[in-house]
Image (cartoon, rainbow, N blue to C red; front, side):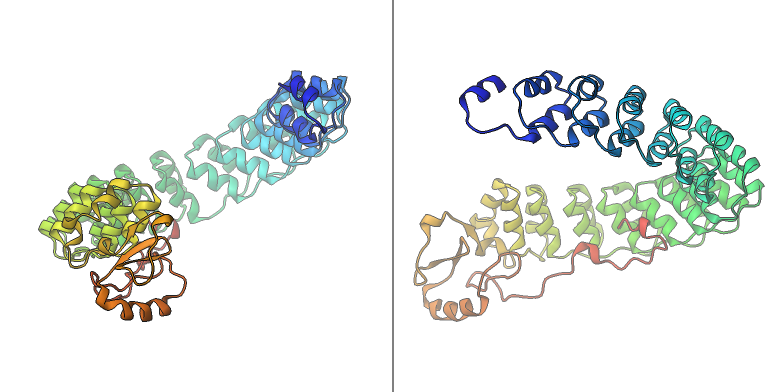
Length: 465
């Protein structure tokens, strides 16, 4: 192909051809470009070959073609990916060198041989991030090597990261070699990630904790940790514990917290469980708790395609839903849920339903939305909008007027009223405005988006409702 292009096409081959050929490790193409005197690539050619571990390509560029030396990016990335032979090649034949990020990244990703080579043959060194990340990721041998051979040391992040991820051997090693940080993050993190042995070890050394410990363990379903904290610690938890356990489907944790703790939960428990399709938990909360739910329960269940939850909530609860339920179900192509809501609920939908269904190419949804049965609903906005081709646009005096490519149906006697309304709309956007027509009730304020629930969780990361 390249030979044909070189012969039959005018103009030079772009230097980017070099770069991408080297990035893909296509040494034969790079050789062809050199032989035909194409413009040399940028420093990206060698850097990308090094980063992706294409040793043959990098050796050709450096040793045979002698085309450039790249930048520090090449060796930094090769070290990060553990390409020791590439690091050695660049060290021997390139003047670009590297930065301290090379050893930092090699340590972070567990490449001990690369760390050793850089320590012995390079002078850039590393930063405290090297041991911090090695400890966090459980690379015990690298932690020992850095502590023994380097002087940069580590920060409190090393112990916190090792404890959070359950690397007990590293915690014990660092405890003997460095100052112990009196930080709640250690026990909270170990609890959240379910590392009971680490929790017991830290507890024995008098480390503090907060309610985040039990809250986090409950969120991720670690009943053994929740039970242990309940028995041996006095920080307790907050309503977030049961709320998050319910939201993430951990019924055994919900049951334990209900039986042995007094914090209880909020409406977020049933709302979250419903949104994520955990029908058994919704039923359990309905039977054992009094907090109930809000419209967000059906809204969330409909938005995420959980028809069984929508049906159960409709039958057994009285909170109802908002127009967001049908709007979001339509956007996801869940015609079964839209039909159920249309048949059994009175909230209806907004014009967003059809707009979003068409945007996501749910043609069956759009087609159903314009059938007589669907448009008969007194609050169904499907009836007011039907997408038609531009070539079928009518005049303003036609019973079907076109606004932004959408046909808006109305009674001819109301043409004058429509013209006045049309003036006030200006440029029409179906998502932003609703058309007032003979088949729709007057425009009303839209519901607040699903994400607007005010959640009092103490941790922003736990805002999962």
